[in-house]
Image (cartoon, rainbow, N blue to C red; front, side, top):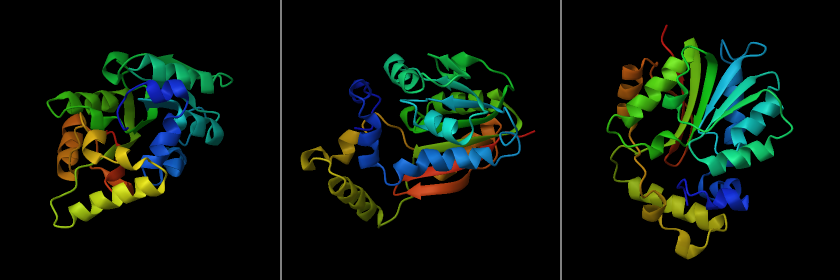
Length: 228
């Protein structure tokens, strides 16, 4: 359910499905854009902002509502997701669309801010996560900020099983079919990491320590800044 399978995008139901899976997802795009909009660089008129892994365009729609002056660049490696986003934003000007990854974009110190929501979790920690974060850091101007939201691996705790069960209960209460509430299947192929590992990767990529701003069960949001 949390995979990058483009079928939900084709059906136009991707955002609804994710809302059933992630507590607070409906307001997460609004919060992420508001947070970036208050940053030193992206708060400026006509700021250049990158949406990395734009999916079906939730963050783009919110950016258009809150900051129509932003010059947006939207990238996604899924052509079908990108097509859905472009359709939803067809009346919005000032969006530069790219069917690509951040590494392929090759932007150097171009952006005042960036958004990356539910992307890092899909990348293996074999150098790929570091390459992604490093490319994001390079794309930012010094002191440009990154809003990062991801599925995290919680620290070991005897209560972690209860948190997992709470996620199942949330999904059932949200209308997900009982047989579909299989957390192992949902996160198959994902590569969540803990906060200590994220901090180490951010340091290696040239970013500040992650500052938390959102958490819903194991989904966490962080604000990072490119070091000068």
